[in-house]
Every structure is written in structure tokens, then in C-alpha cells.
Length: 394
Ligand SMILES: Cc1cc2nc3c(=O)[nH]c(=O)nc-3n(C[C@H](O)[C@H](O)[C@H](O)COP(=O)(O)OP(=O)(O)OC[C@H]3O[C@@H](n4cnc5c(N)ncnc54)[C@H](O)[C@@H]3O)c2cc1C
Ligand SMILES: NC(=O)C1=CN([C@@H]2O[C@H](COP(=O)(O)OP(=O)(O)OC[C@H]3O[C@@H](n4cnc5c(N)ncnc54)[C@H](OP(=O)(O)O)[C@@H]3O)[C@@H](O)[C@H]2O)C=CC1
Ligand SMILES: O=C(O)C(=O)Cc1c[nH]c2ccccc12
Image (cartoon, rainbow, N blue to C red):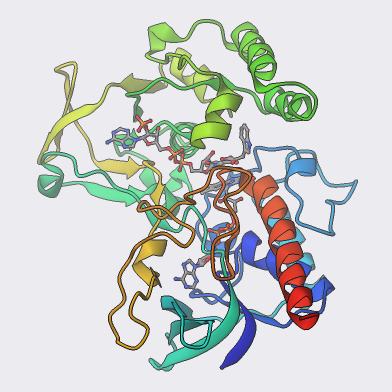
């Protein structure tokens, strides 16, 4: 099937890219492995989730949030916004299409994309001039290989499967990971009266969503060092010194870490209060698991019924994005050099991350949330438009 642009993934990145292409009347197709668009928001996010960033930083191109919607939009309302977006731009992804391979064919100068049609079992081949990777930073779960995990007698889940604490009443639950998912899940469990512990092993910043909003506004006008000084100072006034609870601040500031390493500060939803009141217990790193017993690095041993891994995500894009060094043979090797590094993340730093070689682009891989998605989609489509018009004028 010959296409101008193929987009892999119908999350906010795929939808935003599609809307921008439609505005410029550039034909395209979106391939999505699930049976819905925005599968993260519709299927994989827990019930209590609200956007952490104020609505002005969470809009997709051409559609600001309604003045009537709350500043911090709940999950359901964000899904309504996306439904409206899809209708406005008449976006019709092809569902149940899991992209298993894509490579640039030097022979005809086009991308060759193979998708498994999960309904029919057939492999569909798409040929495209432009390829946009929009498969998300959070598509594959990362679970650490802890010593003895295979002997664990309780249940384990990843944060992407978690919905609410209602299911875990009367269980001793251990949350591993203290990013935003882990901290928010621990809070949710605790509101259902579930005995909850959380593993905290590295330093992180704790902020409020209002402080982050102020930081985002300041970032437009002043250098990151000054933003971080303000943010850390305000957070200290709100939270005080948390080191007696095992929470230590990194040396570098929160906005600097977000910009350089993609590490988001923890935006507190009430977890800190519950840690202070000991409703949520903080434990150090796990050294070993044996049956139902979990041994921690401070020598303490606990019986645990359920482990929730809120240990983040890994990129699996290099499993399907291939570089074909030998176009006339079927041999394709991963050299990662068109756009991504060997970890499957952009090889170029922000703001040069979204454009690769051979008309290859990535949207939503800058670790800047929906704000980054919107920036990428706009830049990518401007570039595609430019390449098309340069070709026409040749
Ligand atoms: C719990 C949680 C809360 C978050 N909250 C916020 C927030 O408040 N504000 C914010 O700005 N950001 C937030 N984020 C970041 C979030 O990742 C982005 O907001 C947004 O969802 C990214 O959109 P995306 O389209 O790039 O990726 P995704 O939403 O992950 O969409 C990618 C799509 O690609 C599909 N796909 C993947 N691989 C393939 C393949 N091989 N073939 C076909 N289809 C494929 C997937 O099924 C999925 O539908 C949150 C993330 C998580 C996990
Ligand atoms: N409401 C919202 O807007 C929300 C937004 N998000 C966003 O989604 C993205 C993903 O967040 P999240 O799912 O929290 O993932 P993150 O990658 O941010 O966090 C993973 C956590 O797991 C820890 N970890 C990893 N391996 C181990 C291990 N072996 N033992 C103990 N701890 C371990 C990490 O700690 P270490 O540093 O020590 O490796 C880190 O604290 C982020 O950008 C986040 O901000 C998430 C939830 C809610
Ligand atoms: O929730 C996330 O991970 C995000 O990426 C949102 C986000 C973008 N820029 C930020 C700066 C500080 C805190 C959160 C974010």
C-alpha cells in the first residue's frame, strides 16, 4: 500500500501529527496495534489520574482546552478532549495493526513498513515517503530482575496494569519505584486502607503542581538555574526537610534534570502527608526475595502479598525499526543511526531530537509530556511540508 506518510501509534503524538498533516492536506495513515486511539489514556492509566501539568501545557496543536475545564484536567475529561480532537480532524487510525518492521529501501528511496494485522493474521506491507515514530515513551514496561523474584509467592503487577486500591484490601502491598506513578499508586492504595510500603532508593525532588506551573511559566523568561532556585526554595517552604523519611534531594535542580535527563520531579498528590503520618512506610532498596519474604538493604525482612512495580518503561522501538545496509538482500541490521541510539531514544538532544535521516521523524520522545508532543508534531509537519514543496519545485 503506497502512502505519503505512515505514522506508527495513535496516542496523542500520532493524533497531533495527523491533525497537522490534515491541515496541510498531506495524505497519511496511522497504524495502531490496539483497538482504540490514546490507549494509554483509555486503557492503561489508573482511575484517580489527573494531568500534572496545567491545561495550557497539555493541549495538542490547533485546539486549546476549553476555558470552562479545570486547570488540572482529570483523565476522563482529557479523554473527552481527545475524542473531540479526533472528530474535529476526522482522524481514522487503522487498528489492530502492530508494526513489526520498518526499514529504508535504498533501491526506491522509500520506507517499507510491515504491520501484523492482528484480526486477520496477515502481514500488511506499507510503502511510504515519510515515516513518523509515534509509539510512545511508555509503551513497554520495565521490571528489574531482582534476586529471587522468580521465587515470589505473591502477585506482581506493573503500574500500567494498576487501576485502583479497592482490589488490594487486606493485602500487604509493596510499591517498588518512587516516580510519579509509584508515589501516586502508594497514595491511592493507602486511601483504601491497604497496608502500603514504598521502596525509595535514589534522591528526587518533591514539588506541588502549582510550583511546577510557576516553574513552567518562569522557564519561558529566565534561565533554568534561576527557575530551579525558586522551585527548590518554594518546595522547601511547603515540604520542609524530608530526609528523616528517606527522601533526599538530588544535587541538580528539578527543571534541569527534566530537561537534561527527562527525570520528572515527584508532584505530590498527598503521599508525603501519608508518609509523615506513617500510613505509608518507606523502605530502602530490595536485596533479595524468597517466597513471600522480601529482604531490604537495611536488613529488615517483611512478608508481602503483592508487589507493584512502578519502575518505569523502556523503549522497544529498535525491535522494529531497522536499518537495511544491504537493500538487495533480506538481511537488515540494527545500527540505530537514523534517529535513535541503542536504547531506542533520540540520539540528538532537545531541540534537535525529532528529525532523523531519510525522512524519518519521531514525535513524543523528548520526555517533555504533552507539551513536547505538541512541539514535535508541529515541527515535523512543517519539515515534511518543506521537503514536499522542495521536491515539487525541482
Ligand atoms: C501514568 C501516566 C501519566 C501521565 N501523565 C502526563 C501528564 O499529566 N502530562 C503530560 O504531559 N504527560 C503525561 N504522561 C506522559 C505521556 O506519555 C504523554 O502525555 C502521552 O501519552 C504521550 O503520547 P504518545 O502518543 O507519544 O504515546 P502513547 O500515549 O504511549 O501512545 C503510543 C501509541 O502507540 C501504540 N504503539 C506502540 N507500539 C506500536 C507498534 N509497534 N505498532 C503499532 N502501534 C504501536 C500504542 O499502542 C499507543 O496507543 C503520562 C504518562 C503516564 C504513563
Ligand atoms: N499524573 C501524572 O501526570 C503522572 C505522570 N507520570 C509520568 O509518566 C512517566 C513515567 O513515570 P513512572 O511510571 O513513575 O516511571 P519513572 O521512570 O519516572 O520512575 C521509575 C521509578 O522506579 C525506580 N526504580 C527502577 N528500578 C528500580 C529498582 N530495581 N528498585 C527500586 N526502584 C527502582 C526508579 O528509581 P531510580 O531513580 O532509583 O532508578 C524511579 O523512582 C514520567 O514522566 C512521569 O512523570 C506518571 C504518573 C502520573
Ligand atoms: O509528567 C511528566 O513526566 C511530564 O513529562 C510532564 C512535564 C513536562 N515538563 C515538566 C517539568 C516538571 C515536571 C513535569 C513536567
